Image 1 (cartoon, one colour):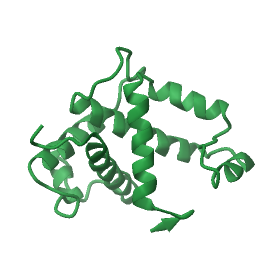
Image 2 (cartoon, helix red, strand yellow; image 1 turned 90 degrees about the horizontal axis):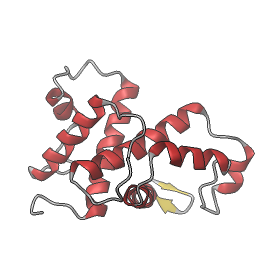
Image 3 (cartoon, helix red, strand yellow; image 1 turned 120 degrees about the vertical axis):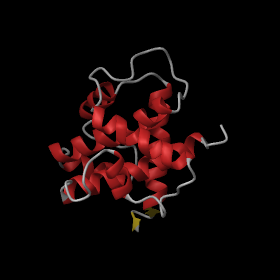
Image 4 (cartoon, rainbow, N blue to C red; image 1 turned 90 degrees about the vertical axis):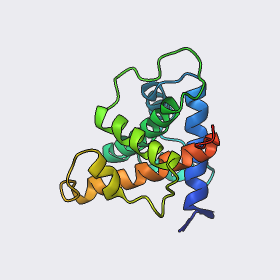
Length: 161
């Protein structure tokens, strides 16, 4: 998928690299959201900023961006990636998401890649029937799985570490 001259994978990797940098710097998800709000939703991407200034992000968009940053931070914490000694989360993250990230990291370390790892496998590990999650939740968790893998790739973490 192409968008604004960049592939989806490249855009995700850039997002993850930025979020890892924020994690390493000891920033909180809450402080990042405050910065985004104060900057009017600017992204720093020349192609996106004129559009972002025309309208503020919808609450759903802010919630999704927050979930993605949470996922990167949880993945970094799961593999004990170094950071400054400041709290990473002012508000405790969702325990279900913590378990989800832990299970996806474990699956990657067990040799699974995204094509082999099915969302249903992770959901079963969460002791949830595959049909229990709604379509929107499944889409968000599927995206979260990609973000965990991208974060581990950025961190160059493998089961050999």
